[in-house]
Image 1 (spheres, one colour):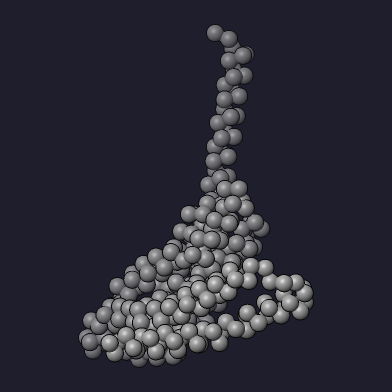
Image 2: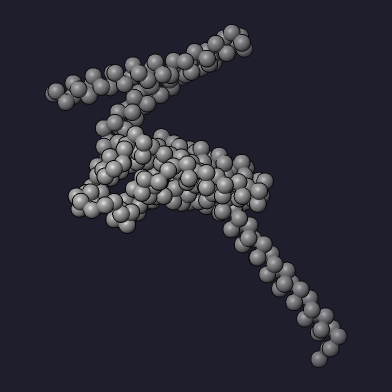
Length: 276
């Protein structure tokens, strides 16, 4: 009974906080609709019901983060680092290979399941007329997040400065941008923002904080944050790389078809000149 009362109190407090956070957005919409546009709000009842659903959904989601995703991420980080932390030896990055593998796997899975990425991928496939594969784009983004989060965990373990990685990553992105097709560049950059979704961010943040808290000599405040930056920049690199590979395959395919057509034409001419 006490657990139920605690949950009810936590839920009501979270709902109150959510209302306070969402009210400015609602106020701006109402002011523009009534004062600027000077039109009545259509389907007011449906909007009110939808607004209540948003409040309840956000409240339940925030409670789920605090009670499930954050503890799971921290627990997994602690369990994966127990052997290395209790050995008493100096920190060796090779002792944390399971952490890197887990980070890559959870980053890939969380990104692939993110609803914003699915929506963007389907829109890109529709607008491009099928030239951009929704599944190909989702996998490319997920691979970028997996590599980025894994490398970010390596940075936490080794204690190397975060700017080194971010500056180097953006240098690569800039080089890729100058060599990429203009049609893919905006989508690639948007893919980096899509990864910071309600699914990916809590899991990645909890993993980083839990890892920094359990690696000797690391501070959760200084070293625990920064994984989101890795999860944002590396998908840009992976999508630009994916586009370059697809373009190269397309050019090779056209070259092979052209060579085959030319060979067929030469054979036809030879037959005409030397009839049997």
